[in-house]
Amino acid sequence: MTHDPQIFHRLACSRMLALCLGVYLLVQSQALSQVLINEFMASNSTIADAAGQYDDWIELHNPTDHPVDVGGMSLTDDLSQPDRWQFPLNRSDITTIAAHGYL
Image 1: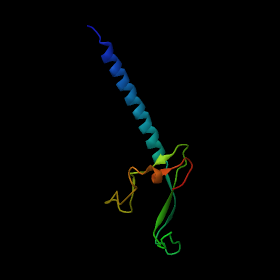
Image 2: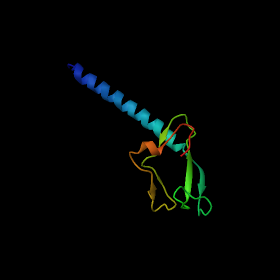
Image 3: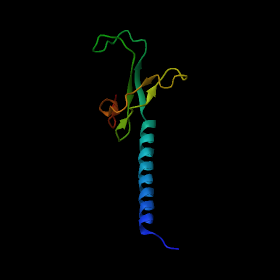
């Protein structure tokens, strides 16, 4: 049986790529699982935003040593609507929480 070195090389590269992707996703999922709701304001009638509105709000905290992008994640107060309030996708400039930072 002959072994084609190109096939072996492609398999090795594919496995290495899969391993790197898996490690990246593991680190990301661990970081995401550590994002905390630090503060929240429900039924807000005392703190107006820049537009003069009294919207409810939350503050998220990232206690990890790595930035975490919450883009595409959701918050809800109704489990039948799990994506009731979704953070924007592809806007990491406004959805990334710095290491030890707040959003």
